[in-house]
Amino acid sequence: MQLVLASSSPRRKELLALLGLSFEVSSSEFPEHPMLGWLPLQQTTHFAQEKTYSVAKQRPQAFVLGSDTVIELDGELLGKPLDLVDAGSMLRRLAGRCHQVHTAVAVCCYEKGIDRVEVATTRVTMKADVEGAYSRYLASQESLGKAGAYAIQGLGGDLVERIGGDYTTVVGLPLKLVARLLQSVGYPIS
Image (cartoon, rainbow, N blue to C red; front, side, top):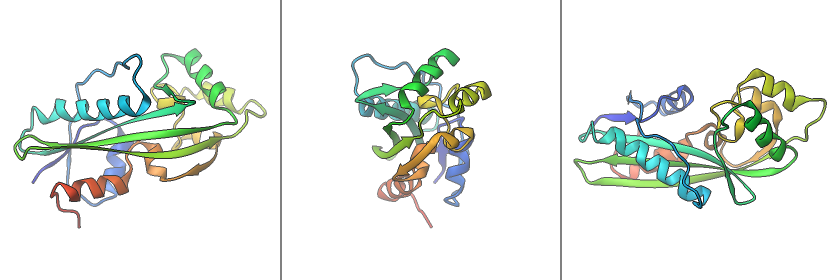
C-alpha cells in the first residue's frame, strides 16, 4: 500500500516522517480560495479534502493524505496574508490574545472507497506586543504564506506565550490524529 502526502510543505513532510512511514510527496493543484460566509472549520475541512482529492485522482490506488490549517479568532477565519501589510494587521489582532488553530486531515483511496476527514484543534495564546517584537517578526517576512501570519516552528514561536493542545496541530500536521486516522482506514502503522 502506497502512502502519498498531498502537500509541498517541508514541515508537513518532516512531521509525517516522524511516524516512520514510507511515503511519497505530490503537490496538490487545488487552488485555495476562501469561501465567503464559511466557518473556519468548514473551510479547513473543505481545503483538506480538495487537496487530497486533487492528488487521489492521479493516484487512485494510493492512500492519499492531505491537510489544511486555519486560524480562528473570535469566530473569524484568519488565512494566509496577502502581503506584509495584511500580515501586520493579523498579528496586531492576535497580539496578547488567545485563538484556535484548526488543522483538518483527510485520507482518501479511490480504489478502496475510503474518504475520511477529521479536525484537530489547539488553543494558542500570543504574547503582547512588547518592545517591537511583532515589527521585527514582520521584517523577517516569515509571516508570508502562513495561516494567521506566523510560523510557530520558526521565529514566530517567540511570539507565542503558551499552547493548549498538540504542538503538531499548530505546525500543520497533527501526528496523533494522522496515526489514528490511517489506522482507522486500514493503513498499517507500526
